[in-house]
Amino acid sequence: MQHVTVSGDAGAAKPDAKVFRTACSKLQLQPSQVVYVGDRLQTDAEAAITAGLHGIWLDRRDAASVASVPRIRTLTELAPLLTSWCGG
Image (tube, rainbow, N blue to C red; front, side):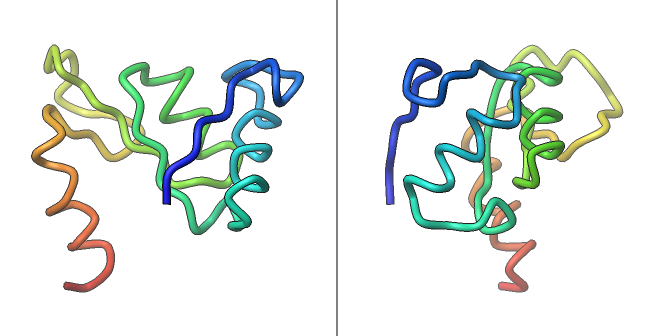
């Protein structure tokens, strides 16, 4: 399922939890059922986790060896990470 939520729809912008929760509501999913992948550590991945989602940092620049959230360097790393979370 795909959906786009813009800050104008939510009445808030990242990193405000309201924008993440609005997106989840429009998807008819609980935040704990949603994975958010973003290329900004604090604004995207950490903010998603604060809002109750699963946040993943897309660190294309390989800027950190350790992160406070799950980190991938390319989108090709996403599927294996999700598979490992689901026990597949």
